[in-house]
Image (cartoon, rainbow, N blue to C red; front, side, top):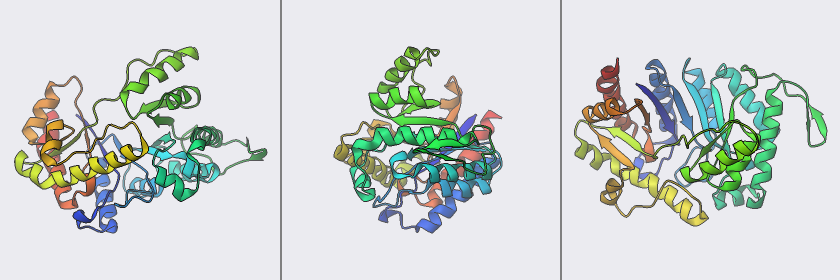
Length: 323
């Protein structure tokens, strides 16, 4: 059985934890996951969020890389308009060396208007800035001199991995999907509906059909010995996450898999957040064509103790069933 972790580091007041303690817990979890064969750890990026959502994914992954040896990392997603392309390239090359080539990234244009106001960047420049960022990163990752804004530059040192980190684009619109086909190594849509635009553009460019959308339902799964008790304990944090994303979506007219929920009972009926017993998760995974679970242990500000309870159940009672 394969598994992955993701973190976004929301830390609302109801969590009762400091950011320092939350960061430290995530580093311990990354080391734990690496020792158990975790395939990917993903972190995300937002800025100025009231709940402290991670603004600095590159330093976080550098810290995780220093505590691990095998697991791959992904920034999902890096918001291109808020970064100077050259400095971003230098930081990513550094991260590629620290991790010995274990990093990939998804580049996106962003959608939260408050963030663009904070950085004083017009939202109308998103497409241009994404294209310039991806073009600059690919040139910098070659390790050779390249033209940048009318001058020749050469970033040193070069990446550890030949060609540097793989670059995919994220997004939820037709322009983002078609842009990904033209300039990136792949596309990770926020919602499955826009995949067909990417697929169409790839074939128009004379490349093989990439097939149907690779993304499935956006779902958070946690474990508890008693699922009802676990839901009662964890649902306030699930509710915070979906509503925080839902507010962004509503305010910015963005396509998103998240929707606001009136209360925990309503949220539970959607099936987007689930608390299962280990036995039920094992049964589900054994019935699946491919056994894979992505865990979001600190979801919505989940206290580290509750997160560890879920992870330890996964370690003791789920993984052994597949070995």
